Length: 384
Image (cartoon, rainbow, N blue to C red; front, side):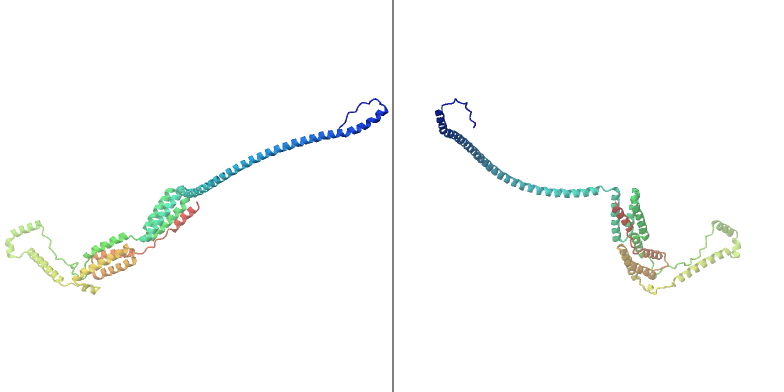
């Protein structure tokens, strides 16, 4: 510290001047001690104040720490409770997620099915027509394979051609041309009309009982009939009676030539009848099959029944599409008709003609497959 400078004093006497420095020397340390004590007291007060302040701060920190510890414990408990709740929520969420995944999978499956259904329903008219045509052709092909007849396939192809013609779509022209081509091939293959052939065989069965046998006696065809004189007209008879009455006397003398002619005609007719009866007693008939004449009258019934059975067997074979068996039975029927029945009769000739017609038409027909139509439909469906 800077002390104030004292004003200069008056000059004292030498004795006084010699005594003053010694007194100042003894007074200076006490002043410094007082000053040091005051400074030390200030420092102690400051230290006490700092210590008290520090203690207060420590107490505040302890209170804050206790409070924060209590808060942290409460938060930890709350956190544990929240953790348990979170676990429960997680388990519930996992169950819900599993349920939702199952529902999502079900919805996806339903969606795929719905898309397929919508796609099937949203097909164009041409695709529907092609699908119907293909289905009808395949059904007709199976029917033809079962029955052996090309008629169902020809009908299906004809209906398909008419339906495609009504559509009038350029993209279906190739299918229509293929249908027409297959229809011509099926028609060229021909078809066996089994119902008509069965009707003809039934007609032959009905005719069997009326067919004449070679061994049965038949009236001779072309026998000469006795000549019958034509009746005399009434006018000529009247004139003859008048002339006879007028010339009665002349008739007594000379015989009438008309009566002589009439008597000769009657004798000639009587002789012709007698000769005809004599000719009928003996009949000469050429027989190509001698065993046909050996059939006794009581065996004719069994011969006709056997022929009927052959015809019925042929009919059943035709209905079951066994054409080889039918051909064998028809050959036996034809041989029997030619051997044991009179081929000069019109009934026998008609029966033989019917049997020959059935034998000519009863043949196995290979139904051609409509491969061109199916290939054209597949090409159109594959190019959409």
